[in-house]
Image (tube, rainbow, N blue to C red; front, side, top):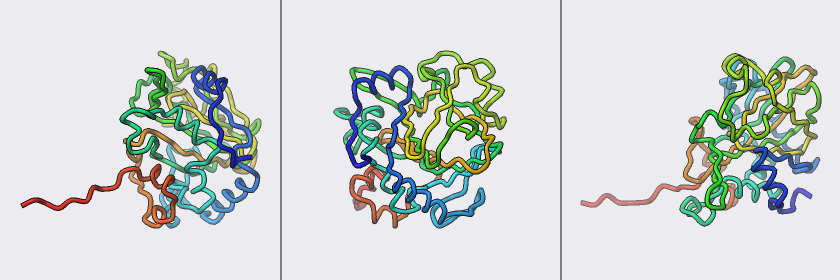
Length: 278
């Protein structure tokens, strides 16, 4: 089922514009989920600040779990997510640019990609929202096209139910002009979560489900209260003229083995060969 190209339906376009997110059920098969988890297991254990090959242990705050940055370096299971047919056409639509100058070098670029492992007591605080007015992650619809600065693709690699620290979003907040009450008390910097935020909804997911959301939407996570680790993978897509969020770069080995379409998304602009003129 995951090999099927899934273009956005009329109802999906309506709901994404209205709510700022879509939940895609069964985006990955059980075999694809197992392959991703096996590649994560091969990287572990990894501490924050350390490297496993080209994969970096990272953390945003103090208790939001372990990020395995540059996870597309882990192997073919994660490489296949770069342009996975379950979501890539939807992502292209919501990022926008087709038929405009933005599209000349390919429509997409991944500026950050990581797997996140989150254990008991951990969460990520509330962040973003239309009130921020940040250019990088803005939501815009103009001249009949979506033109979003960043679309996030989050795939569950474990089941995420009550107590598991699921992603929380405030539907429609990508268009909001005001922050929710108590926003400043539950941010990433303070080690907060989204549990106490008015209007936030927790998204329960089965392993293999995918959540597409515009980064402008106000989001975070619930605090995990169950044992074990929540595992998700996040790919952040934007227009091809974007650049890497952090200092990471794809390895020469990765670029050499990617298909042309995947390489274009990972590294859309090659250096122009030139000779100095005398």
